[in-house]
Length: 200
Image 1: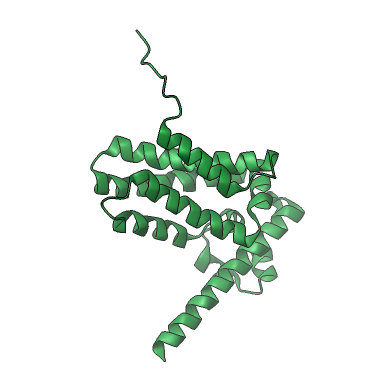
Image 2 (image 1 turned 45 degrees about the horizontal axis):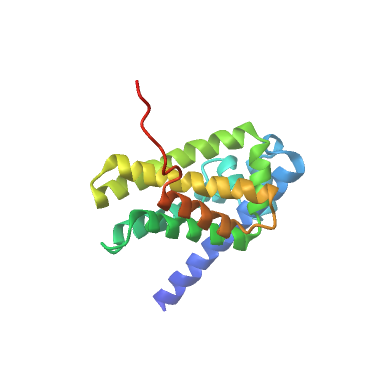
């Protein structure tokens, strides 16, 4: 019985978070991110302002659709990855996990276009992405013991995902997942095999 109650409570939390992010995105698209208030988002999602702050520290994270569960799942994938699995493969799994969830929400393009028009959203996205990359890099360093390689792999994976999403906007016939796969393949092969260290 307790397990069923726990599952119901978790589903309710997911539904509330989804309602808040959808309301925040819809209002931001209608009015502009700077003109939306937390009170309006909470009212549109039919929850209290107090409930809003149980899920998000500010309106920008709600508009961005920030979900701490994504980072927790990513960290768990790094910590539990089999020894024989390459770090870049682990990062590919992490990126696809998040990308599939965003695609299932159907808000990837709308949110991406909005972010590119808002300095405030871009700033908050940059800060949160930097913190995510720091935590992922630390976890990967613990696994492989090489901080430089770990940070390069994590940041390159994040860049590959961002580039794929940006290209998808200009080439909508290309699926985001396919673009991510192609980007990771380039990373795996080396983006410039003919590179030679410059002579000083």
